[in-house]
Amino acid sequence: MPDNSNSLHNSEAMTRLESYVEKRAPHEKEIVRIERKLEQHLSREEARETASRIYDLAFDVDEEINRILSDPKVTRLYEYDGLFFTPKGKTGFHRAFSGFHVLQSLDNHKIDLFFSHREKDSALKWLMDELETHRWEATVRRMNWEDEGSLSCLTREVIDAIMADVRERRRKAQEQTPSLMTPEEQAFFQRYEQEMR
Image 1 (tube, rainbow, N blue to C red):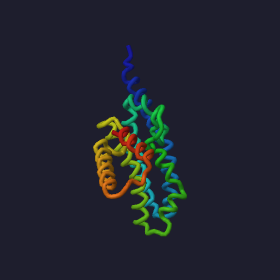
Image 2: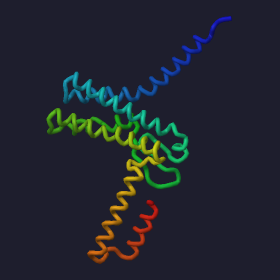
Image 3: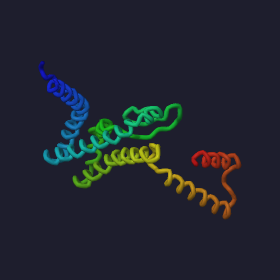
Image 4: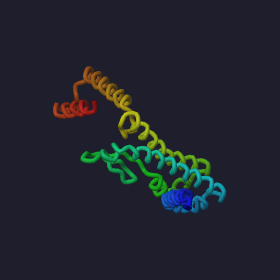
C-alpha cells in the first residue's frame, strides 16, 4: 500500500503557499509602485530599503488586524471593510486600515508631497512617522480589545480620567462664572457624561 502521507503533506504545504502568495500579491504590486515612485526622490538602494520598511509595516498592521478579527465576538459586533470597524446597528466607527489600504493610501501624489521642499532625511522621517500611526493604531486597538473588549485607542482608565477632569473643570468654572450654556444644553451634556460611564 503506497504511503500518501508525504503527498498529503506536500499538498497542504502547497495550499498554504498559494494562500500566502495570494495575500501578498496585491501588497507586492503596491510596494513595487511605491519603490518606483521613491526612486524619483532617493537613490535606488534607499528606495528599495524604504519600500522594504513600508512593506514590513503593512505586514505588521495586517497581523494586528488579523488578531482582532480572529475573535468571533468582533465579527458578531462589528463589520470590517479593510478601513474601519463599524459597530453593527450603531453609529460611529474605528479607523483601522489593513496593510493593503495603508499602502494604497500612500499614493504617488502623497509621496511627492512628503518630499516637496524638504531635505531627504526630513522627508523620510515624516513619511515613516505618518505611516507608523497606522501600526500604532492597529496595535493599540488589538491590545485594548484583548484587555478590555474595546476597539477604542483610549483605555477605559484614560477615558474615566478625562471625564473626571472635565467634570472638575466644569465645577470650577461654574463656581467662578455663570453658565454660558442653556439648561437644555447642560442637560444634554449631563446625559452624555452618564452614557460614557
